[in-house]
Amino acid sequence: MMNNHHYTGLINKYRNRLPVDDKTRIISLNEGNTPLIQLKNLPNRLGWEHEIFCKFEGLNPTGSFKDRGMTMAVTKAVESGAQAIICASTGNTSAAAAAYAARAGIKSFVLIPEGKIALGKLSQAMMHGATVIQIKGNFDDGMRLVQELSSTMPLNLVNSINPYRLQGQKTIAFEVIEALGDAPDYHVMPVGNAGNISAHWIGYSESAGQQCGSCNLCDGQCAFNDDVISTKRPTLVGYQASGAAPFLRNEMVDSPETIATAIRIGHPVSWDLAWAAQKESTGWFEECTDEEILQAQKLLAESEGI
Image 1: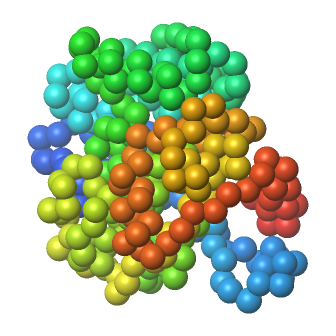
Image 2: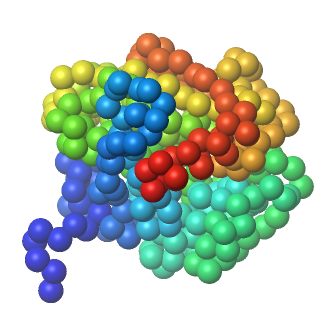
């Protein structure tokens, strides 16, 4: 038998700050609780004087932060009586959805765009028993199709348009604050469908006891901002690939292109929520080329072992 101090996932840890109750059956793979690693060598190498930390979300069960959102989305799907979930994905979401559906004992369906997907993540989804359907078109086409299918069939949609996804992902902010003792000055992250930057702002706002406009669950009337654990909120900076940068262009992109499959999205479903997060945090969006993405990936690995 496990002792009372054994970590059992983010919902159990943050139960009083999430939309669950004592009767809710929690679907978890012990996600979350990932390390916040201070970068020691890279700042010196680049001449930076600031303290830089990396939240290593690759240590979640299926290898991405999507597990945080999926534990909540699938938990609430099961609570509603759903027997199947569906998502559009180029990789990470499909792996997480399939794994948590398997854990819950329900079916999962994944729509993937033709080509240009993360094959490793797709193989994860298939190993977890997902029914994978390839469509003609890109991720945005798949997103439109799963919205249509979930509105007409008994399928629970678990892309980040699902408000419970953001509720799970907001816990990254909780963990960052716990590790640092307060919110950071800046939080920088990649932006694709824009659910994660929106979720971070929810988490940081609740932790500071402030309302925010990036929540798609409560319309700004947050029920979870009584537990104040920080004195401030950070400035959020979102990075997009140059070929898939609707926030930089301030308009949707019909044919996004980038090697970064997870953010090859031209019509982000959390468009309004992300703009609210950017404006309220006095943050901004930046872009980088595919070459810069590859260089940064290599630089982080060879400088810090991450």
